[in-house]
Length: 128
Image (tube, rainbow, N blue to C red):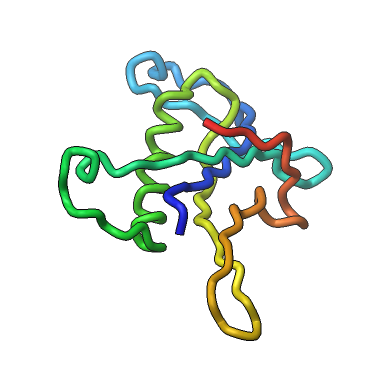
């Protein structure tokens, strides 16, 4: 599995009046923006590396569990670093294997698409 995570970030809009304590708490009254009853999202691919391996530690395989754990942490960090943006982290996706149907071997990996075709409209894909 390639060491990469896909963050799906979606557009938000204000859901009402601003909280009068927002400047102290950082709270934002937001809801998912919809256009024609569909969420508007972006697919952001993040390449990862193992800092411990770079410092000489034994290589750890990048598997589904590590991908999901990394994705949740990266999504939280993405939200914190994009506070002024209209987008917020919605979900994480991990690389999907492409399997040879005759042999059962993994022949390649595919990065997931933006999201559900019936509920999400994907804007231009982006890489971080």
